[in-house]
Image: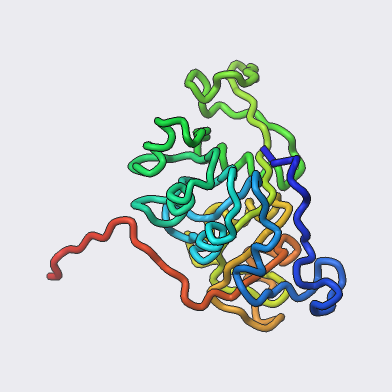
Length: 258
């Protein structure tokens, strides 16, 4: 799934000759702007984006990709935005050629483009999607799962029987870049997420060649207790502070009090 013809992104980011000093991956990873954070994006890349629906989307980075002007992207995410928000901005901009996701539901932006052939869609069961990403990060090339057996999901895939039960083989899923949002980050890239907004972000970060984080809050190194770290900084390459994140609603419902 990785766009292998794409030049490898620079994981060093701003810590080159003119950047702050650092030793290997244990260094300061904060950049000054979204533009700088996304500087290595190229046409044809495979990009994973954290979030569940519109929850936990790195909105500033999503907009920044459109402004970057890259095209022919393969998007890997739970879904591809909704109601014109989130990753639907990429659909509107016409920069996606393929989507790997687990849900398209009421996403009319994706329905229209899939029906016209503008965007190819690969539906993957949600648990399988998470495991394909986790497997890539763990160096596991493929695994067997019963999910999808006897459905269109199994078409073209190896099927085997273990202990009287049928399984199909799923391959690991890698990417050039992962874009994720964190509630809190320190200078070395240690992250904390906000409750369910964590979703797929940690497994995406473990396997992407370049992980870029939009952080709500930046803190000094040591301010996050090691036992409270959700994702170690070794998996993070660049961080941009986004103090005013959007938190769009998909649907808002109210009820009378009392």
